[in-house]
Image (cartoon, rainbow over all chains, first blue to last red; front, side, top):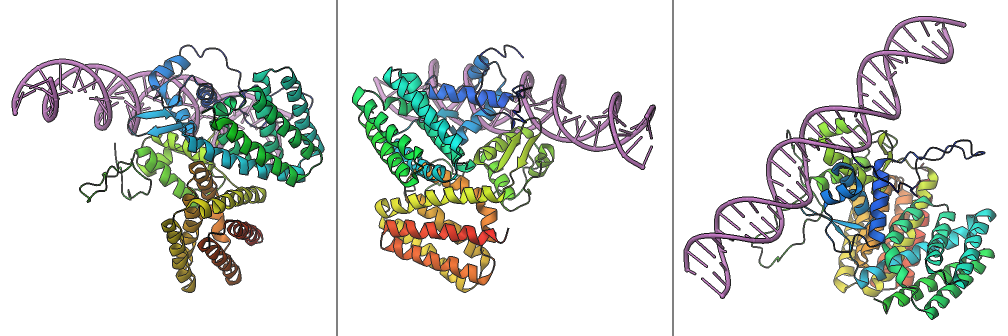
Length: 238
Length: 238
DNA sequence: ATTCTGTGCTCTGTATGCAGAATAACCGCA
DNA sequence: TGCGGTTATTCTGCATACAGAGCACAGAAT
């Protein structure tokens, strides 16, 4: 094997952490090559280094990543399962490109999932979990005040993800993450322009208050509005 | 290659049919080996030939299916993406087993997705599509009258799938199919006992009338109830 | 000039081989 | 007899090799 190269830091959860008791030995990050490749490719798709519609050349990618075709191909299957790639027989993988309708459809499902998550969170989440989300929100407020777009965006995503995660529903989380990954690239555009950004921020304020009060219905309502408006914000950019 | 063996009939959609003009030449069903293996394995999981919790031995399966390890392993990744298998590093694939909570969680998401689908169908579906669903329902009534459990069950699944398919929302359909595949085996149990079966059938009647009237809200409400009751029906069996 | 056909190349699909991890079997020892 | 350590075996993970499909280019025929 050649250059198993750099940039190995990863976010995917590895095998379940045994005991984060007093941090004597964290599990050493046993990341299978498969997971590493999947993560890398996912990033490459979401940050546009693999452009929508582009055909993925296996050998070229292999060379770039320093792995052989076998793990790469297995990763491609996984990514295709997440909806980021399309597998065409005898022609390999193609980066999925989204029509307007695809985006609208995704957002609709995302909306339904997050509304469900919102209701659940208010019922089942512990106070600590809610406090954590609110902390993210506060942090995001700061980033908004400083107009740090990228950190703001990442916190925004993190808040949505955390709400779903706090709903304590694994299948819900899975489905949400897949959809969110698909929309990641597109959503980023949705905050162009100061007034759109401000509107999105205001909706997040409402979400935070609803969450703090554990008002599930209110939270679901705001989330729904947030997504509808979000879609509209994207619409005229595309 | 050895015994590419029998039972090749498959359901996966091939490449898009060019022109079914006057039936000069239908596209010859070009099924990639990958898809065939995926379909086979999925069936093996849902019908229990691969039992939950069981470790999947790659070489043994290869022998059984008459393919080499490479396509099999790629299929395993795909199935893991659908949530039917779990991939443990250095230990291979394990058939996912569901706790009570997993089942409840899945049903909750399934409920939300189908409710969304129900609302959408009433808005966007063509009359033909709705007629098709109602035809399935009529057929299912017959099967119920004759107490043909397996055909009834398949039609039941088909109705739910068709409602989602008619909603014309690809991501929604994808998510729903994955969840439904996970629950397929378990749902079958839910109709044990005549009174449970009758109750489920009654709910389907309501669904049919709501659909016929294109009353999205009513349909969503019934679907929600159907799932809640469905979960309860499963509950005391497990 | 255009279209059709043949040929060569590129790339994917599949099979096989090899190395390391995990598990099971075994043996010595308390 | 129970237990710990060590060895053997099995199975996964990864790499490589080979065959066939798709595609492009070129040449021939109309």
